[in-house]
Length: 71
Image (cartoon, rainbow, N blue to C red):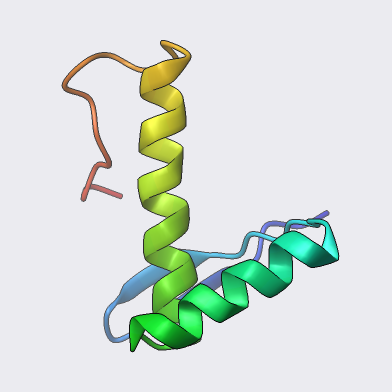
């Protein structure tokens, strides 16, 4: 599959698609609605935070390593 890159005035973005059980999706959409954030913003932030947490827990990244603003 070709990597889809979306370029906007705010920068370059990559596309991620995941499949999750419907019960999980329904819960996530409920939390999204309660958050007051837009759907894309909620899922973008939640994915980024979740990835950092998981990578820390399984020692997949260096302790102070984070997202790089450099492209």
